[in-house]
Image (cartoon, rainbow, N blue to C red; front, side, top):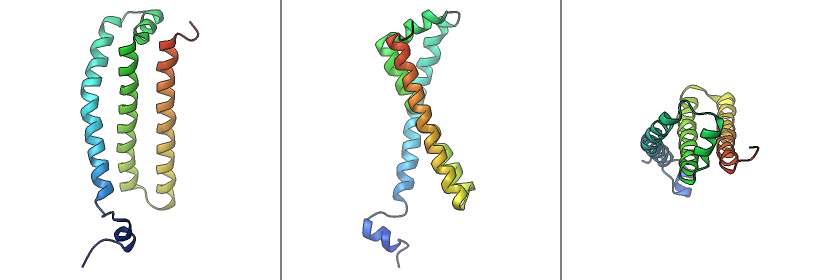
Amino acid sequence: MSLETPLGKALGHGSARAGTEHWLAQRLTAIALIPLGLWFVFALVPLQHGDHNAIANWVAEPLNAVLLILLVIALVYHSMLGLQVIVEDYVHGALGHTALITVKFVHIILAVAGIYAVVVTALGVGR
């Protein structure tokens, strides 16, 4: 006797497949956030009394811009995965589906806004 649904058998996906990928993605983003977060904190310490131009010049350095974009992506994706688990566990029915769509939509907007902010600052638009 199998616990797989007929659709799951037809598609070749077991019930644990998506959960394992989700769990692994959340752990990998958490691991990625450790060095990125430490870099971010230690890189900003010398700039704590800097003005807007000093920080904009710091962001304009290619390595800093790339690492900031990676930090934004990892943070937003990790947050989305965590909130998705919370919604799936505690919100049910149509409200749960709506909440999942909303969580994903808001996180996409946050990622685009964060990346846009880094790019605009790095390119010096508006300076």
